[in-house]
Length: 514
DNA sequence: CTGGAAAGCGCC
DNA sequence: AAAGGGCGCTTTCCAG
Image (tube, rainbow, N blue to C red):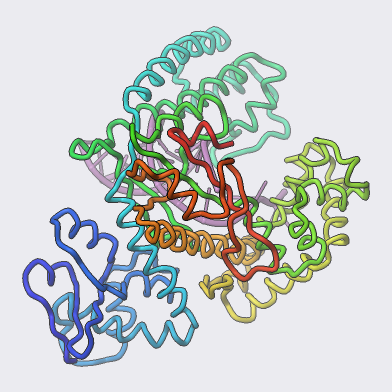
């Protein structure tokens, strides 16, 4: 096979150098880059990660190990040779995967997006993020006081003490002891649900569900965030070092664990207290960038629907425009309620929502919900045609793709089970949209990192950048962005609609952001 | 004691 | 009769 393998620690990490070219292959490059950085070694020029390539070829196998890939791509070739060392296996896997990437036209996605993203993520993980442990501690203490009071009120409303964190005990209190009506309420496998939806309905007729809703929100924030995050601060760096997973989700999104930094609260004021604890230290500045309405913009592009494209091209409020279309009214007579309704419909379309769910969500009749959906598709025929075609094509080919060719296989589309088939059809609708958004956001990471690197900055999206001159340089790097918090930056991809970038920065970006 | 399922809920 | 897509974390509860 003509492969040279470096010895010692490097071979143990699965780095392979081909003898005829200087290209280096790695399995889980991001992990190795972190390990190398920790030891102060540089790993130059790695241009192929077998884990990422294997995942692109078959996303049904998340975070494949070297053994998984050997099993999938080398063993079936029927060679009689022994598997060899891990680096040798990695080299063989690369050779087997490259033709697959080319056949599926995934090579540009691999080379231009996934490989650069892996290197950026390694730096982000290594850099970590600063969090104000004292602020979190104060928040926890305050939440604890409020929780004690809420507990007392819940026990009083129930008539006795019980474990407020146990849905089972709560269900017995609500429906067996207090005999609250269960008619029309959502059920779980074991009985009537006690989720927020149900408790909100019951809140109108009894004080316990109302208090419990308050209790749950605070208990969640305290246990998941203000209590847990400080424990994850690395004593060596004083920062939190999350792990990003690049070869995991079915749609191509990233995920984050230990802790999950992608679900830090932002919606409620109590939640924003948690988010505010992620503040740039003295002398540094945090920058965050995001796209506004990216999924609906992608829908407009993929569906090539003139109305949606026009709405985005002219910078309209998309939910208000949808409201005007669906309700058949002029754009100036759209009220906040109309807009709220249209927003639910817009999201529902992306997720493949049916009329039942829409009716429940909006507290309207099934007939009305059915009518809204009908009118939506009448007014935006491009969307209807696109969604129908998506499902038909997916059924024929057995998979769906994103704009950059990322695949997701959907064998369930031909299932005899109606429920499983319907689920697969919703996935067939959602995945090209959600997955394309993931592609574009990764591409934006690569471009932004390159821009800031050119400006001699060390960029870390959502992480701190150490540089006294950051603000000046960021302005330059992100031209035509100026001092305001939100601006249009650039078109990241060849879309039929403009993408709008939202930037937030400051010593505390959470305060600046919406 | 550990592991896993279920319920619930935080984010996009 | 009909689960809106994608995640990860905490708690309870039960099995081993």
